Length: 76
Image 1: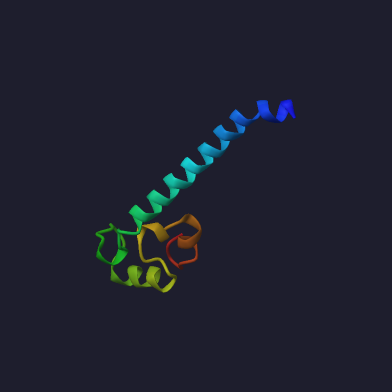
Image 2: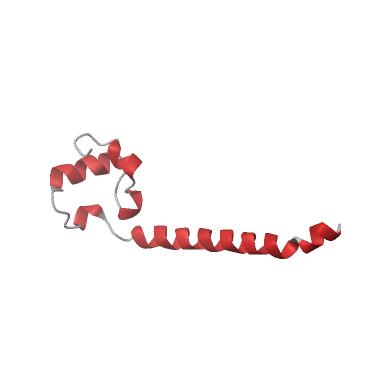
C-alpha cells in the first residue's frame, strides 16, 4: 500500500502528460480542419488532383496523411 501511495505522483505526471498530448493533438486537428484543399493553392495539385483527393475523402489539411494520400493513384 505504501508503494502504491508513493507511486501516485509519478502516475499523476504520466496522466497529465497524456492529457496534454491529447489536447495538443485535438487542437492541431481542429486547426487543420479549417484549411480546405479545394481553395488551397498547392503546387502540382490542380483541379483534377483535388477531385481525386476529394473522392477519397481527403478534403482538408486534417485529412492528409501518408496513408490516406497513398491510396490516391498518381500521388505516390
